[in-house]
Each structure stands twice: as C-alpha cells, then as structure tokens.
Image (cartoon, rainbow, N blue to C red):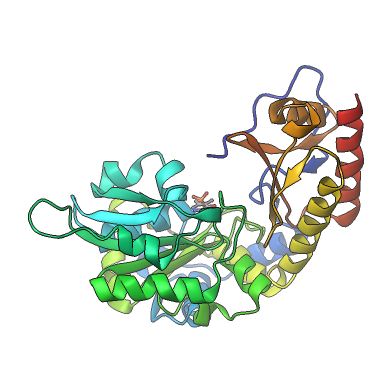
Length: 354
Ligand SMILES: *Cc1c(COP(=O)(O)O)cnc(C)c1O
C-alpha cells in the first residue's frame, strides 16, 4: 500500500529528511566494517558460518527450534504460507495485512490460497471477530488453515497487539486446529515498545519472521523461524523459489550487527515518533493517531490542505513522506534525529501557512 515515492516535482531539492519508510536507511560504516570481516561459506550447503550464527541466534531470540535466512520479508511470508497451506485453503488475516495489499497477489498466484479479510481497529482484530469468521466446515467451505497476524500492524499505524489479545486469537486458532504465523516485519519495535521478550510474545505462533531492513538498518535480509520440521520443509520452497544463496554471510553479518547495535535504539525512533505526533496535534486542523512505535499517520484535511498537496509542499522543502489512502505516513528510523523532527514540524507549519 506504500508505493514508491512519486517522481519528485520539477525543481525539488534532494531529500534531507526521509520519513518515507524505515527501509530507507543505509548501512552505517560500522555495519559495513562488520560485513567486510564476515567469515563466509556456501549458504545452500549449510556451510556459511555467519548465516548459521545468525540463524542460531534468531532461533534462540524467538524461542523456536530452527531458523532460515532469506533475502526479504515477502519471501518469508510466501515460504511460510506455501509450507503451512495447500491450494484452496484459507488464511485468516486483517483486511489491511501486507500479505493482502502489498505482495503482488503472490499468495493466490503461488500458494493458491484465499485470504479471509478480517475487520478491526488499527490493523488488529478481536478473538470475537476471528470466531465470527469460522466457517461451518463440510464440503462447501474452504478449509481454514492458517491465522496470520502482523506485529506491529503496519497500516494499523505501527500498533502493538496487546499480549492478551494476541494470546486470545491464538487460542481460537488452536481450538480450530489452525496453524499460526506472525508477520513480524517490525517485531523488535513491538518488543522494545512493550518490554515483553520476543520469545514470550511469539510463543503461540508456529512460525514468525522479522525483517532486518525495517528500522534495523541492514541492506537486505529477513529470518523466518519455527519448528525444525517446518523449517526443513520450508527449505524445499526456498530452493524452488531461488531463495537459496551462496556467500550470504556478508549480509547476515549486517543483521548480526543490527541485533547488537540497532535494537535498543528503536526506543529513540519511538520517542521521535511521539514528538512528531505531539507537534502535529498542536497544529489546528491536523488529526493524528497516537503512535505505539515508529509510524505516525496523520490527516491534514481539516487545515484546508489535502494530504497530497501537503506531501508535495514538504517534498519541495526536502522532506519525504508517504501517502496511504487519504492519510500521510511518517516513519522514524536510525537516519532520523530529534532536530529533524523539530524541523519537519516547522516546515509543516510553513507549508500550511503558504
Ligand atoms: C515490509 C513488510 C513486509 C515485506 O518485507 P520486504 O522485506 O519488504 O519484502 C511484510 N510485512 C510487513 C508488515 C511489512 O511492513
């Protein structure tokens, strides 16, 4: 749902404050140094020591038996769904889920599943809503197979699922005999914001992954974790889809560096997001959702200026934002500092006064 930034307006200056996405980070010099020093081997053969170290560490962090390194979060979702489901089966997910809106229809195209879109506030749904989606069974119903949740919920405003809600939807899935999968693209944001350890947060999920390119600052890479037999089957799909790599440790080293140096600092991104929301809220006519983590959604239409027009004006000042539906999204990350937030607020006031 977040599209590539539109071609900049004619005469636009270079982007100085990039709030477009937490994927816009560049590897830091220290991360690049870690990459240069990585011990390497053949990942497909299970012989890359740096990839193996990352996978062991992620399995331990997430409390799962095994883990696999993949190039992207999308491939984690595709492989997980291919492994959990057979064609014709149904996945239950929020109607704004990334698997529904932003993965090119891949789950229909490759796994042959249908996705049942659930409603609920901020990208989350209740156990009651999930229960209401249970089909009667029998030969008319698509077999329901998998519960999928996003943590944090991206289009939901970076919302963190309250643990009790998460446990309640997992309980419904368990009772129905469904598998459970967490799209944890921004899982560490949820962990840092809630203080709940990752393994505890995801204990109810068969499979879970996190993205090292969302706020953690790595140039590529995501890790999918789950039971050993699940990861064993997932390797078949990794091979089939061309996701098996060679000296991938050069990238896994960036991910290990991110675990060591870029997780605790997510709290700074959350503080910057709250400061941005606070400042925007003080501007008459802007409505802002209170951020749980690093995504700030706001609607300036009450000022008389439409979202798209404000985004264009700020782009002319070197500030890049994104648009989702009628709303503007600002995303904080390791390339964004507190003074940049103050400057963004000042430039927003200036754009609205113009
Ligand atoms: C970004 C994102 C993905 C996909 O990750 P890529 O690494 O971009 O393929 C999946 N789910 C959510 C919630 C995301 O934000």
